[in-house]
Image 1: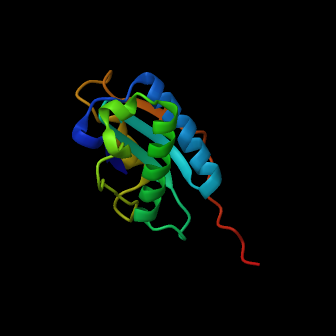
Image 2: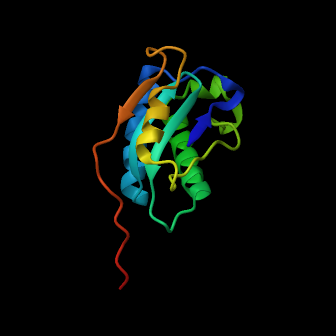
Length: 137
């Protein structure tokens, strides 16, 4: 998935990126999503995530965008001055899914190769785990 900041503002600092890693770890525990990597530039975020079949890709995006925006505005009060109306992310976003002709390794390579220079894109890889669907009772 790719999320773009509202107004394409370049506001993702090292501190905000570190806090995003914390937020997505919490989302992972709460919603049973398996985040594999976050790639960030100053005005957008790439996310590689595995989700249980119960979640549609658009629902995963909705969860990630809404929870992260709320948490960022609570933690970084100065963001309100730049992004009024409590909208951190632009509407919509981009979603690719893994299929027969496109696998996880290709997605990881795509995220790694973003940015004009290697110094521009920051990449964080989450510890490896897999999503287990809850067993029916």
